Length: 428
Image (cartoon, rainbow, N blue to C red; front, side):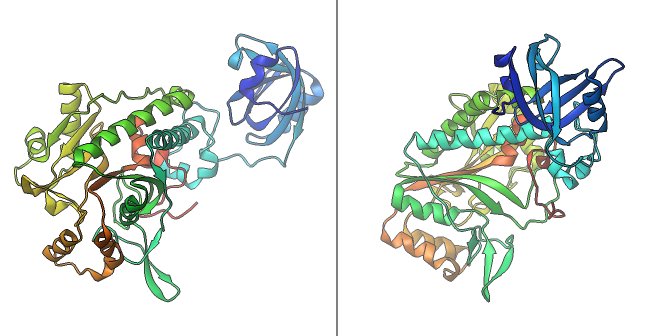
């Protein structure tokens, strides 16, 4: 008999079926016992009346893996309106050691550190697994949207010979006796691949050795990177980003609607045109000093409130960041060279995306590095490629975990990350 999932039970009323999953909960009443079985799809209610089977159920522990064979009957009060009766129950492994928290409760009562210490079991809770389903759907939407626009998925090295962002926030390692680093981003490689495919994207891990211990930072996270050639300026990149986000949100609503419902959230609306403000105006809106070189979290929150109040939008572009705060490969604004053709996208008051137009002429790269007093040698292989003809191009990167955290309203990005890596955590 082929195994079916709990969500398929309504189509089998009157039939004998085989389920398999985890003992989610047992309710032992005087005349009857209930076994709530959990599988990848949801929950199934199994009614136990036979004394021998009841005795077996009483000996089981939560999270023990079992197989159940029984008859499906309709019951409006049961999950999905059906339940399984007259069951036989067969353990598929030894009795499970119960985790240090109850997975059957609507909300995990354990603190986040305890959940993370016991992630393999904590992630079984519907609220934790729902966030991961949303994450998977978001990546599916990201890929599908860009595939439909002629982008090619690429896979670039995660061990590199030099830092990508001209900073010291890299993880160093030994590469057969030579110094190497974990990649901060696929930036250099995705730009070079524009010279091959014109439009590329990548889904992969990036590593930042920054001593952040905040609710929004991870030392390793999943970056959704995009780069496209033959752009007029950063606004072409912003248009692609807007369409990509719309595709991601629509796919989340379609593929992970149940997960959204579990968390009690709705997918945000991506406006047909996301409002945009220049960095200098953003400082005024946020009440920041005019000489502030960057936006602090408090400024981002103020801008998010302003965008929602003035435009009814959860999203806001901030354009024209100062060149002093952007990497050397950023294209300056021709009309205001102290500012960049770069942008950030805020989602509900938190920076979600960084992007912009890149330099594409070899001489400009040499000049940009010289102006910053940085040597060419560490990134010579990257810079030299621009001697061989590269189109005007630009791109962006979305932090997946931060996107899911903002979408779900999670207070900490670790709540939507399966096995987070941060300043203090290397296990499990």
